[in-house]
Length: 105
Length: 331
Image 1 (cartoon, rainbow over the protein chains, first blue to last red):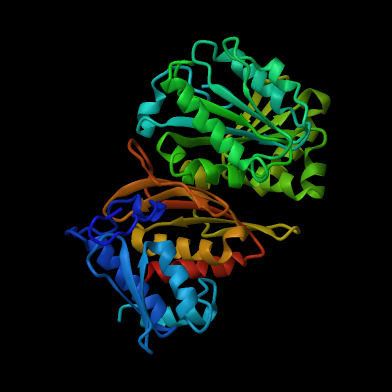
Image 2 (image 1 turned 135 degrees about the horizontal axis):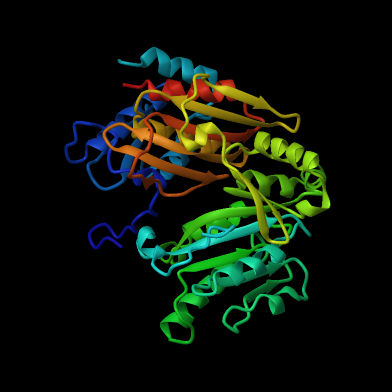
């Protein structure tokens, strides 16, 4: 448990088992990259994602001001289930079209 | 190494960060698991693994046949280790650690869990990989599944759990090959290969290896020009084999797979392959149902390209492939 925030560290997740995914490595770059990808995916559902710079945490928010902190990738999806008005489905053609239209943006 | 890939020496735990390897020996009722395990234990006399037996019935007889150094295996009877006896399995594995630390038993670098014939290997793998204590001491090494040469296909056709066992396998072991002719074996191997292209298939008789069929090219690293290839099955099970030429963005891939498992975990029966990760190099990925093991960095001569095998139920393989490529294209 963290002595500052009284939070139990989240379970190790397999997605954290690879140290990097980018060639130009700098501290925290993998987290920022992950945050950027999450932002692209969730934008079509009216959600934003930001990285507070602490551990595996992400801040997920909707446009009405509801905000939750998610500790780790599995917690992000659980938070999204609560905040999004419709299911974020990786096999949803509408989502895929939205992501494709935003690729490179 | 043996049919169950049990280590012959006592230093293999070093490659798993000091954790003990766990081999799951699964297979439908009467498919020859215990016979195979008896022969395997005979072969590794110098470095015997600990053994845990699980049986659906209350009364066990197999434990008397499977003594290791005079010690009988741990027995979990009266239910399946994937559900009703899941906590007992975790306690049994913890008990092994406790007995070692107290000096009651010698250290075993490997554990074989013979599951009941009705157990689903997925939840058992989840127990090993995610229990807050066990995950620091044990690592899943292989899932070996026995298939009766005579009745195996019928079991798979009529029993859901037999199919789940087959799809979870790293190694498929056809048993009782002496009871059928060579033509029947060839047909069985082809059918098993269709259902689980990522598994090694071995043909055995009375615990002795007769022949081995390596996994499909997509998993062993041979280059494929076709991209991708689909095998449809009437049972709703589909196999998607992917070869991706360019190095993969790990963050995009891991987000995609985690979201896929979050929404469709029960229908993603198997994920296995080697990824060429951008800036990192090759890693091995292994998942059974919703359980994905921590990726393993690979060294040595690994051919470039990402090769992945997905076995899914009621998921359109073309949509799955399109989805993956859409995520990988995110800049």
